[in-house]
Image 1 (cartoon, one colour):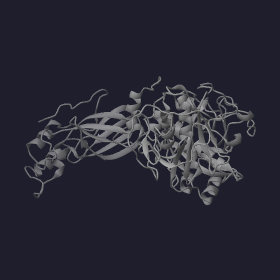
Image 2 (image 1 turned 90 degrees about the vertical axis):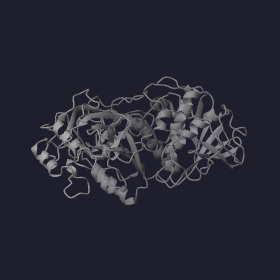
Image 3 (image 1 turned 180 degrees about the vertical axis):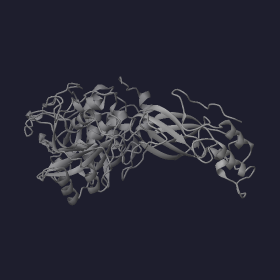
Image 4 (image 1 turned 120 degrees about the horizontal axis):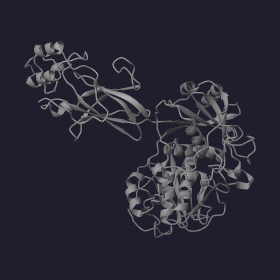
Length: 579
């Protein structure tokens, strides 16, 4: 996507960009639509609240921002309200797993509480920023949550390097402060770069080889943040090696910058110590793997991108049964710390950095992500036992990753000209099969028992939960109808609409054919209405609560029709309907 930084587009995006999870202690403020100004009394009054301007959409991808990020330790300059807007909005977009996570912004005039619901700042204290243009700090239960929030803020500042705003540099700093702060300065930067700095040292196709990650993407950081896919359930479709490569690189992969003689990563690290080196593990259907971003693994000046299998067993089921609240997922990334680092703020933040980047990258490539934190000692020991993770590596968080699936919207036409409004609310069994399946006898890949509503188009509609993208034969059937099938339907993100044609009424005994047995059922309750003895709702094909000429007309129109009723590719619409 090309540059899209106009205020008009920003305003259009605002409705989507402002849907954020509430934070404890937030406050709403008065609305202001001022042009970008320097952060100061003109924007936020002491004792008052002011809404920030809408964030702009830069059009820069998640991948190029990850690849270009680096820290500058000497920060200066004055920030505009729009620069602050983009950065604090990004910080507030991501979820938190602890009891609370409050975001504060330190400016030349004081410190303000950020309310992500109103996208506003409220006066908190007279403590002004002590360096740079402004800073962000957190009150939180978990350092992990602060780390997760740091990364979108950092990447939002990187995305401004190529935008209508002046570039913003950044650096996390903890020395001399109770907790680490994220500082920003408005100053010269090196610029965005797509240069890939790392390739797998393993020959292609050999065990442990990872394909090159992409450093550019067909997405916009701000749009990805507006639509983060933080999920609690996943389709059990295995990830490709390319997806695994991309996620591991985004979380903790090498980039081109070189801090104090060491090879830089997609995340910052206090004093370039890189606390997660050799302690990131991946569990999927083929086993458990350790991620290596160095070669040799302990040399922080080197770069690599490979995995090493440490267990050939599929341990995913064991992990799910062991760890409370861990969703079933096709892939788990287990973020560990060496036992000597556990409890150190810088190290715990870095765990959050890696997880936050994986959430952003997963969302950018149409995958979902979930964080499991607060692992108990029993859970940590069990994870190590099941995976063969070394005893010195203590699991801190598990990142579940997978497709959340594509919802399929089903549309069908119901027969019966006199069908009342309530007659459009019907049970509908929807099944998805492997293409070419015997849909009347084979087991379905997915089954859904849904209830329809009447759409403005006049059809009955319902929607399935997410299914894995791909091609399917789809069937639908309701009470006393035949089964319709549409074959080779391609299901793709973000949503697939499927017209399943007209459901043929008259199959009173659900035996797959409209015949004499159905006629006999209808004749036994001829002219009876609901509530009368002998009324049989199986013969009330138009659901008007009386067995009459309309019902026998539907039976006659579909006489000797049988299942499955094939809906041709490209066919749709209402079809013919008897009256």
